[in-house]
Image (tube, rainbow, N blue to C red; front, side, top):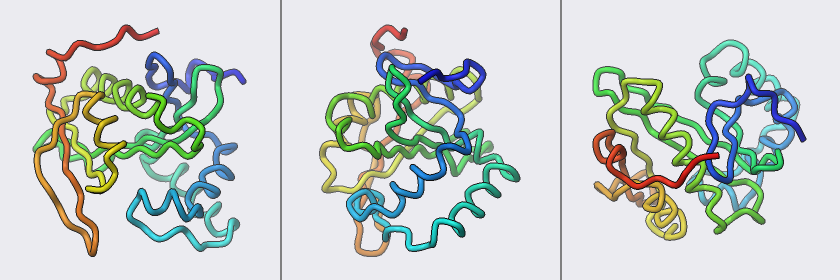
Length: 185
């Protein structure tokens, strides 16, 4: 599968971060309705019919800045494996929150998530004035915490939402600049 160059936002060693396409809709729906993936998001699985999800998804992609902030992750041959996004952008505090989901289980635990996170953080620090990027990960999701640490994030607190406890992790621009980073392709 070929990824058009103008769709590509960032590249890692193993991943390509690209803008979403209409053809991503069905896979997004499948991932959002998956019981196991929803647990990692601390949310109930989506229960909307596909047609209603499609209307909302298309509207967000056309009439908001979602296409700039909600992107697809592909592995090096062009297979789409997940999503990565940044949101809660606070220009005054110069920070944004990061979220990632690897939807294809085959790619779990193989370094694709941390590679995609490094690629998007590098992109954000190179193209914006952001000084801090943070994320929340469930306290029991040790695999994700290790992947985020591998990508340069450090724990900085705890937060709570309903019955869920989250580890808050961050990376700061000065800290990020001093990290050894694998060569990009």
